[in-house]
Length: 88
Image (cartoon, rainbow, N blue to C red; front, top):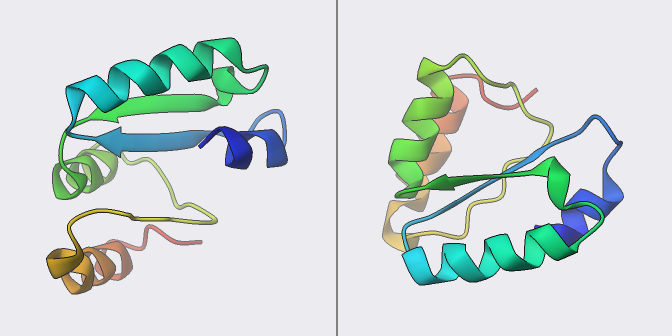
């Protein structure tokens, strides 16, 4: 997330999601040390719930969506993203 945040415009954002509380704690510590950490928004929870929240809050569309989650559900994520027009 930090590498991506460093490569986007100053007004860009990265939304990162994770259900592992310990991983989120470590990530937040690293983000706070990075000069680009202010571009990163953490959303705790599982990927599909996060995608649903994004739709419900009318966020998006996005230039890029990278999902490194439950591989068994990749097709479900893909279809949800396309069905809800989350990619620009």
